[in-house]
Length: 461
Image (cartoon, rainbow, N blue to C red):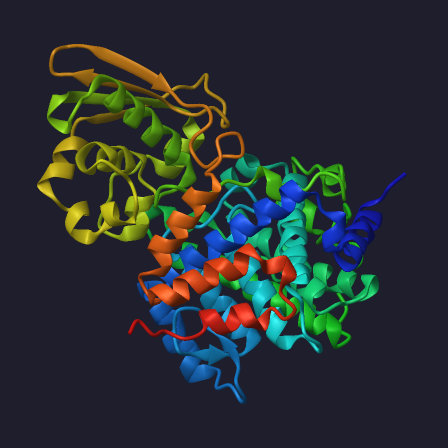
């Protein structure tokens, strides 16, 4: 009979021994997309309010000797831990990073992996970097599934990016540092003690949501570096014991078998989604639904008399607000995402500019939107949108697979276009092309610091 301690050993073994040749080509291709997408989101978020504040703190409290680890999209370099924190915050700052992992695995795993590259005792190849990213996504998601899955864990008040993310970051960092299986076990176990993150931010759009991604990345790097230097973690981290991670974070719904189900065969990155819109993923289906109605019937904002959204309780509790005072609050508002699609033709980053959030045009549309909780809908059912026109026509639309999901993915050109648009906010065109081209051939890269050097300096001229 497999025990939870055995599961920890199995996760550590996977982390320590997986190589690029063990991964299916489809997984490798998807990992490239998620790596590029995360870098684009982080570059665009490099001058966000949250990142700017975090960097003020870090540059006054963590002076770095030597060249340091680059903070992407800036001219700054910090310790590996500081860079992981800052880059993780940047990646999640504009709500454009991927979802469906721990939840926001890209903003956690990619900053941790690249930070560990600068701390590695020997050059790290691009193939090893990409492999570490895949393993990090895998373990972070498995821990969330062992907590009972996304909705049970998050409905309990935990923000899974912060609580489960450190395990993925620790795995990625341990793989980059080439820790053996024993020390990797300690890195993963230590990550459990560094887990944190609660959903209190949802009530006022506080910056702590963005901090959870960066803190999880930093925690994973810290755990791996501590393990590399001989610090031990609890072997029974996943066991049903007092103080065990699953008993503490999921006392009623833990599913420890999920830690190893299909391990080494079913790669969890395949379940992740890329975001075409700058809002919470739970809003995307409704954006697609209202867009389909408008396009199919040739409707404009002036033609719309009302919008009715029937949705489940979990999505309503998370995204049912209409506060647009802060960017974070607006991005958690399903009503605003729908209103932006109707008023401005899209729900991309530009639609969340302060001027547009407070424009009379979008406010007028917001006033026509009604959200109704359907008690019969389960947490995984996407909303049903009904658009009522001024002529009295009613058009109902349900999108089960929103754009960017594994079953309705963004294709390569769309991923590249999203990256180009985001990266161009802080990098000159030649640097944007260089980063994208380097990621495209990442497996052939002899030294991953080549990629880091392209990210580490802001120069638009």
